[in-house]
Length: 95
Image (cartoon, rainbow, N blue to C red; front, side):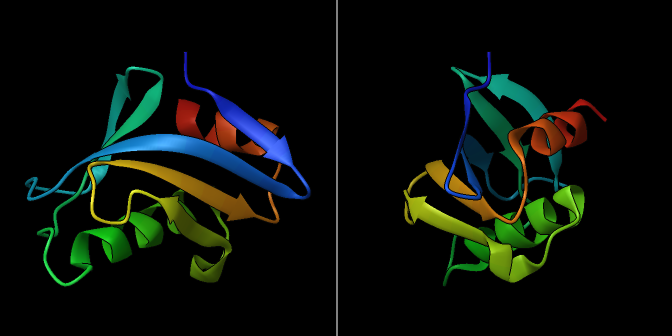
């Protein structure tokens, strides 16, 4: 089960990224985190930027609303999304 926390107008969730995939897409769940395939390489922050861009588009929020608060250089990351509800995040992940 994916753990999604909502507090102070923001939602926090864990993701597990797989860089250098053929395309950027959701790939299910991994140990309570969202698994995300990223087409960008993990070089010079490109994978992190692609991760933020993809999640912003998926959740229909601005790219500035998505921030990596933990795991900048790791496959396991904690993401905070501002100006969204946990219910809206769950709905977007079900698509």
